[in-house]
Image (cartoon, rainbow, N blue to C red; front, side, top):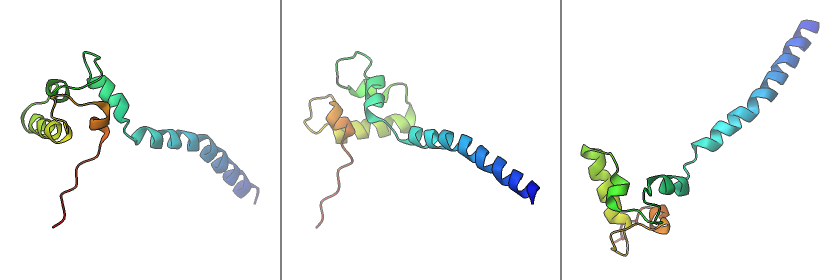
Amino acid sequence: MRKLFTLLTVAAVALGVAAPSFAAKEEKKKPDPEAAFKKMDKDGDGSLTEAELVGKKTGEMADKAKAMFARKDTNKDGKLSLDEFKAGPKKPKSK
């Protein structure tokens, strides 16, 4: 009985110590669009050009980035504001 109690105590302590690190990992999984935007904004002007968004991507990944840029640039000024960047994908119109 004493061994069982000791085992349960050790398990509880281990779980108590490990739980915060699991929670921290969960928080890190959520993407931060503002941090990503700032990282890509190489010239620091508060907007992204297509070149900044594409960066060093090549091939299919570059094509997808260019298509995303075209979709998100709603005012067609050739730049993405933070609001445009954070906006979700446009839903197709229902017929």
